[in-house]
Length: 422
Image 1 (tube, rainbow, N blue to C red):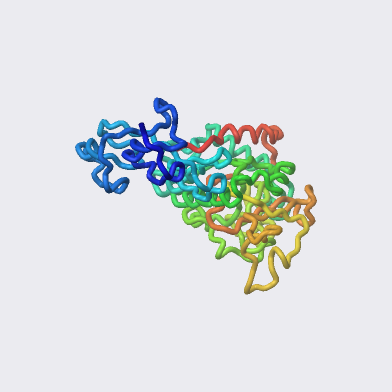
Image 2 (cartoon, one colour; image 1 turned 90 degrees about the vertical axis):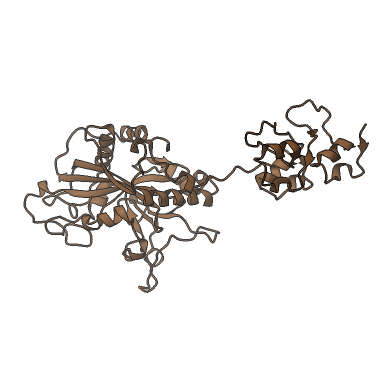
């Protein structure tokens, strides 16, 4: 017969087998045959070093001595004990969130044990399944996409289904807006460092928005006014977006990533990295390979001969928009700034918060914007966009093939896109 312990439920020696064998407590489990929770009767002598013992891989030591909170030991043929969790004295008000605390103490059902945080670095090699296995076995690799593959067709269709009209001014062919882009090559970029940086940034955006980004006002707005390009991940507002620039800087963008610190600060939204949902808008920023003109910030039009044979490069980026600041009423003094020595280099502050938005979207006139005919997207932090594809194409004024069904194009993209796999 056990003697009632004078400390009862407040006893602090309930992890001492010899004490528990001698004394009873009011909250002891009645059915000791329950394999899930029972007081372990152990004839071994408690080891004075407890969980700090460094001889737990010594079979003879383990047969002789017991250790508090002994869990699955290495192959010592000693069955692990099942221990009673003591009620936490703080109950529902407990502030201890360590897993070890939850292993030792019980809490009301309202207190949820936190899940271990995903280790970003442990998952840094997770890539889209269509990249293939061991996609990041090299630090940098350019993979030519098979022109007969569904991947090639999907990216090519996305490029051509987002062409708009721009007034026959920049990015033209023989003075006219292109009606079609003839894709001659698609290269997929595997950049280990940039991908890891991108994954880290993605998790930070998700964490900063408490993994509830889809509930924010900007996300609901984008759901009601969807982009032309597919939504890759609703948890981060991740999209494919186009970027056009001089091919001379492409190797820097592909190997080192864009650097907002050296960006042109006199864009509409200050010093950031600019992207578009319309391939034709990004096309306007690509200079003629012959005369280096015919692009925004340079002279319009091009007088070069045989323009139909010129090849151009455009980059398709995975982009993390996160919580987007949507601009319908543009004010230069706010979004570009007035002081050349202190230009705008970050998104605005969120309303009623000291935190910043993750990106900026200049809204087009179709959806109530007052300046832009086509949407413009800007990110300000390095690592927020990953250059996944480089598309080589020719401009053409002839519409080739039937009119694109945007729903079919998006469905094709979603067929290609799959959950990240190791």
